[in-house]
Length: 269
Image 1 (cartoon, rainbow, N blue to C red):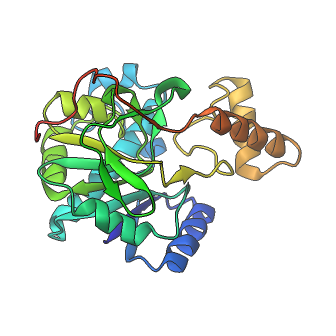
Image 2 (image 1 turned 90 degrees about the vertical axis):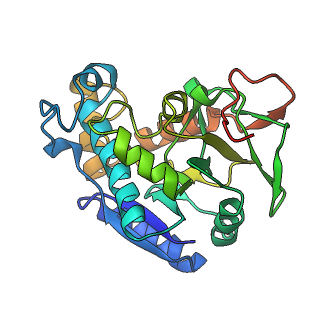
């Protein structure tokens, strides 16, 4: 399966990191330059909806990320692909990614996404339903999340051509962040959202977010942290990297359950 990788022009270290992994795996891929939110005019209502500026935690960076994913969707449509793998540049990839993506793709229909990287809202367990779970290679499953509104991450996912068409048609100006899968499903943009479990792709804690000021805040502390990460200031850079590792270790893996759905995230079955 062809993979599209989002990378900002200024993030050369991330580009080197992700391309080394992809070359080792042997998957077919291309790097697509992302849109840097720092250069966006957030007052342009044709690009960013006014509501987004007040609802997103980091509106400039979040808008740039959402537009970057839309750029990928347009590329998939232009290239005439039935589906493709979308990757961000700060993820750790499994050696069998190519075969796994192909296996997932064979199960997708309509306007559907399948998440290979999943984060739980506020570090909650990502619960998957045993109902209709489809076996995949290496003891993995393709399953419906119990609560799709709590399922986040745009780090790695397979998306169909039809899903790309609808996302492009319905999500400009930007109203939601790129991984608002629950929103996209609720509004009818997506027919179904499923996840691969156990989660095969994870974020690399050595990379800080490129979406905006570091998560310690937007004030003086946040600006200091962002500077430390950007210039890799000794000691402080190590402290912040340790903090990210600690946060990521608290993110609990997905688990299967027989609990009822909050809302079954599928119109296809």
